[in-house]
Image 1: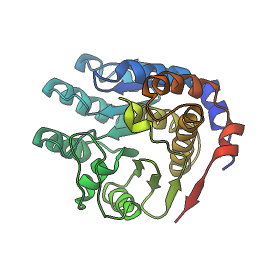
Image 2: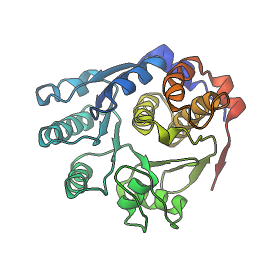
Image 3: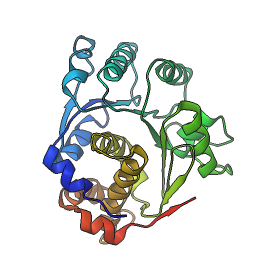
Image 4: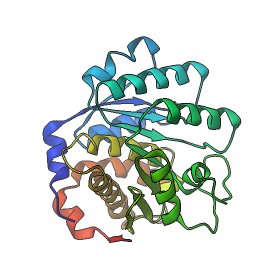
Length: 264
């Protein structure tokens, strides 16, 4: 995979609007800053018409939902569509409660998303595939993740990314598999949420959406892989901090060197 997406991202420093959960807002903002992007974190419904007009992408994360936040998400998403900026959905723990399920159903019916990114349990729920998930955990199952990614991409006419030790990305026709994951990603809070924001940032670049998301997920996975090379599996706190440093140091040449991508 050859690209200069990281270089372009840092040159353009896009403003990314995040409606995200209270657990990860600070980490997501710092992660975007590490990549050279400019984050803005806002849930206020009074700003949801104006922000999509000045931002380059919108990332919606349902991790800690409130009724008022859902109203802001709907308004921001509709405004983003009108302003032709990419919109990302992170359906955190969508299968856990009726409120989350109904919220995601509403969002998907009212807003055109460019990307849905989640773990295996979350995307499997959207595909109505057999899978065992607990809360926001990825869970486990026997269903084919490549097919799940294809099915959800076709259902909602968007790119779908399933994050895990192996990432699966589909546009409904083809599937990219990225084998640069590390066991430490699911051991820290916010790793997936930050990836959704990173994907939103990459979608601001020129190029095919599928290829941009493959580039985003590969770059992010490699940033984690490089950190893990010098850590034990129980050094989760170090991983949490050093991932930000790794993102700041990462360049396109390193991504090219480490990338393990295959296509189906």
